[in-house]
Amino acid sequence: MKELDNTAVSKHLGQTSSYKSTYDKSLLVRERRQNNREHLGITVGEELPFVGTDTWNCYEVSALTNTGMPVSCVLKIVYGCDSEYIVESKSLKLYLNSFNMERLGRKSIDVYNEILSKVQLDLEELLETEVHAQSEGFKESSDSALSWNSPANGDPLIMSVSDSADPVFAWDLERYTTLEDVCCDANIVFNKYVETPGLLRLVDKELEKFDAHEYQHFHSALLKSNCRVTSQPDWGDILVSVKDEKYHLDAGSLLQYIVSFRDENHFHEEICETVFVRLKALLPDADIRVMCLYARRGGIDINPQRASSIDMLHTHLANPYIRHCKTYKQ
Image (tube, rainbow, N blue to C red):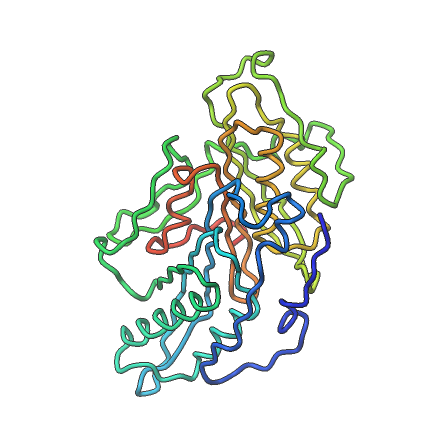
C-alpha cells in the first residue's frame, strides 16, 4: 500500500498533548478519504465501488450537571463512507475530554442532550456530512430510530443475550468460519507482512461441488495494522462475507492476505476499504461485505464496514440507536 502524506493529521498524533478543561471544538482534525483511495484506483467524482458506514464507540465521555455532579456515558457515532472527510481519532478523544469540566444542565438528561447536540453539530460541520450520535445514557423511543435495511441473506451475526426491553447484543460467530481454526493444521506459510493482494486465491465451485447460492462467512482475530502516523499497533477482528455464482474464496489464502497487513501503516477505514477493493477486483460479480472491528485505544474503538449494496450493511453496527456489539478482543 502507498505511503501517504500525514501533514493534515499530525496536529495531535505523535505529539505531546495538553488536555483542555473547557469545551473546545477547534481540537477536531479531519482527513480527506481520497488520500488513501487514489492508490486503490478510486478517482474523485466517480461512484464509489462500495457503500458503508464508520461506527465510533467512545467510552470516555463525561460532563457536569449545574450542581457539579459528574455524568458519564458511552457515545456511539455513525457516519457514511461517502463523506469527503474522516475525523482523526486522537483529535476526537481530546475534543470529547474537553467536556469534562463543563456544566451542561440541571439534570443528567439535560447533560446527555447537550453533549449529543454539540457532538453531532460539531462533527457535521467538520466532516460536511450527516452524522448520527447516540448515548447509552439517553433513551430514545423506537419511533425515532433511524430506518436501516436488514440484510436479505439472514445475517448470522447478531444474537440477543437478554430478553429485556433494552437488549444486549453479542457477535454470533457459529455460522462463521474462523480462519485460524481452518488453517492451523494446513501447513500454510506466512511470510508476507505488507499488503499482498496476490496471495488471494479462488476455488471453482463446480470442481468442489459448492452451492452456487451460498454465502461464505469468514472471521479472523488476527487483523493487525499500525497507525499511519505513530506506528502504534492497532488490533482487531475482521469479518468477510462473500457470495459468487462461480467461485469460492480459498480460506487459507484469505488468512495469508489478512496477515499481510501486519506491518502496514494505515488508518482503520483505509484497511477496510483496501480489503474490499482487492476482493472486488478478484470477484467483480460477487456480493461482498467487509467489517473491521478494532480494539479500543485511547478510549475509542473504530468499526468501519464496506459492502456491495446497502441491503448488505450490518444493521446493528450501522444503527446508532442500537448498542454496539463487542468481540472478545474489544
